[in-house]
Structure formats: C-alpha cells, structure tokens
Length: 305
Image (cartoon, rainbow, N blue to C red):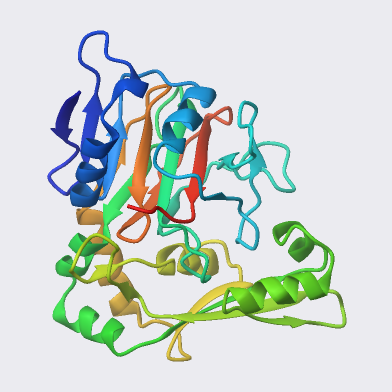
C-alpha cells in the first residue's frame, strides 16, 4: 500500500499499489497508522457498500445504530446489519438539506459515544462542495489562546435538547417512555417528559478529553454544531451552556478560528472512505448544492485493540 500524509495538520492517506486489493491490506499495519494519525483516508480502491462493510468488519464487530442521537438517519441497501447509514438530513423534507455542518464528535453529548467512525462516499457532489472535514482535537487545543484554554478547563458543559411531541419517538426508536427512560439512565441523560407530549434532555460533560491512543489533551465535543443550531438555525431546542451560562463570544470566536486553521478537507471520489478516531478527531462537512450526494457512515462502539 502507498501511505502519504493527508495534511500538514494530521491524518494519512492509503492507496493501492498496482493490482493491490482492499481486502489484502495488512490490518495490523493499518491499526498502527490509525493510532498514530487519528484518521486514515482510503483512496483509489473504488469500494462498494458490501466491500466497505467487509473491510470495516475486520477492525471490530461492535457496531451501533443512531438511537438517541440528535438526527435521523436512513439505512442503506447492501448493509446486512443496518449499521451503515446515510448521513443526509432527510427527516421531514422532500430533498436532503445541503447546509454545512460544523466540527463535532458524534454522540459526544451522550455516554454512548462511538470510539471509531467510518465515512464512505457513494455519490460525491458533482458540482463542488460537500467535502467531509476532519480536525485533530489535540491540534485544536494547542491552537487556542491561553484565555480560551483556561475558560474550558474551569467549565462544565451542559447539552440541552428539546424534542417536540412525535420527534423523540423517532430519534429514540420507540414510543415507550419507560424504554426511553431506561436508555437515558444508561447514557447519563437526564430526561423530562412534559404533559404536551414533548420531552427534553440534559447531559453534562467537559470539553476536553484524553484520546484513547494519545496522552495529550484533545478538544473533542459537540460545542460548535450545537452552538450553530442555536445561533445559525435559531433553534432554542438545541443549546449548549457552560457553567449554566452561554459560552462567551470571545471564547467562541477563538474556538472557531483556531479549529479552522487545522481543519482538513476530504475531497471525495466515489468509493473512497475514511476511518476516524472519534475520541480524538472531530468531523463536519462543507455546504453543497447537489441533493443527490450520498455519504454513508458506520459507527463503531468499541474496538479491542
């Protein structure tokens, strides 16, 4: 295999030598690269869904669905266990939404945060945009000003989400309140059901983590995407609070500027895919216009290596 730096800001890309197949790659060597780099972008293998699933199954069998998350995802054809899903925002709309998504770590607002993420391009955008973006939380933390680091070091975050009647049933995959309550208890979510059929959840966590394969502090969370929902989409049903208050504007500005400086664009080709350490890296996407875009995701709850 041909290994190259993905960017000066981290990650590696892996491509085939002549006539080399995806399934012939040395998984032990790939695991070493993954632990060091945090993300591996596989290009030039032209993988289909079945091959992508078989390849990712070599690294874990502990895959999960999106139950209890903040978004609805559809399963894709070719996935025999339902864990490969389309990332397109299609709930309640005729065409998928094409807005950009700020950096975040999937499910960092609940206890059941997957350790590893896979993304695969089935139909890249034909008219530009739509790149998946990744950014190393270790590099982001180092890029912050002292003031911003001090603000996050002394703070506890609270993720607050409101679910209208009918929506929490979709996102939790059940109408049974007792079942939802048990799930929330298992995931350290505080849930409140209201008389009008709506619900709300709260989750407390720090902004910094120690990644599974690094001994350095990493900025890994869902602050940017939740703040965007509040400010950019005017959604008061999805907010982030720091010590009970809105995060100060100067801290948000430095957070956005610093993370942008170390963000990497993945310029998709059909059949390319990436494995991402969700305990170290954050990801998002650029805006696009092609509503036929198809990027798939697979979330790995845990790995045993």
